Length: 358
Image (cartoon, rainbow, N blue to C red; front, side, top):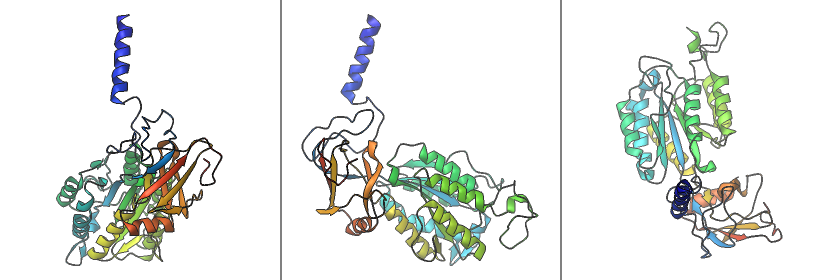
C-alpha cells in the first residue's frame, strides 16, 4: 500500500509539472496557448490535439551544423588572407546576429593535425542557442592540416543532428570545403580518379560516390546539406560539388548547384543567404486538424494553398508534431516580408473543407 501511495504521488507530481510525455516543441514555445483563447492542454502521446479557432503559428528554431574542411589546402592564400582565414572572417559576420535565434553546432575535419584522415566520433560543438562565440573561438584556434574525409565527417555530423528532437524542416548541414573528398582507403590508387593528377595511395582517391551517397542518405531522412565550394575548382571537382549539392536537396539556383565563392565577400554572401533560408518557412501550430477537419493558412491575411507536392504552397513536415512548411513562391514572399503574421484557421470534426483533409 505504501508503494502504491508513492507511485500515485509521483504521477500526480508529473501531471502538475506537465511532464507526461517527451518534449515536442522548442524550449520557448508554449503549446497550451492559442489565439482562440482555448486552453489546448498538453498534446496527447500520439499527436497535437485539434482545437478549433484561429491560431498564430510560431516559427521553428533552426538547428544548423557547420561541417568545415580545414585540410592543408585551406592554408592557401585567398585574397589578403588564407581560405581558412576568409571562412573565419565570414562566419564572424554571419553568426552573431542569429546567436539567440538559431541553434548552431560545428564539426571541423580532419579532427587531428597528425592523423590526416581522422574524424571525431562526435561534433566539437553540439547545436544550441548561444553558441556563436564558442564556435567562432574554436575556428580561430584551429589551423589547416590533413586530408579531406568529407563522407565520414558528414555521417558523424548528420547522425548527431538526427538524434536530437527538432522541427524536421528547420535543420540542415552546411558544408564548406575547398578540396576533393578523399580518405577512402578502400579505393585502388591504380584505377581511381584523382582529379587529373596521379594518386599516391588509396586515401588520395576521389571519394565522390561515397560522399554523394552519404549526402543523399541524409536528405532522405529530411536533413538537407548546403554545399559551399571555396576557390576556383578544376572541372572534375566542380562536377562533384554540383552532384553533392543536388543530392543535398538545397541546390543554389543557376548554372552552379553549389555556392561557388572566390572571395571572402562572396563567402559572406553565401553564408548569409543560407542562414536566412534555413527554417525561414517552417512553423509550429498548437492545433492540428483531425481526420475530418481542415486547416486554412494565411500570411498577412493572404491565403496560402495546401500543396501535397511541397512545391508551391504549404504541407506538413511532421503532422503529429504540428510542423508545417511553406514552399516555393509563398516561401520567397515570406522571406521578403520579414516578420510576417502567419495564421491558421482550424476546423475540427467537420466535412473536409478542401484546404487539407488530413
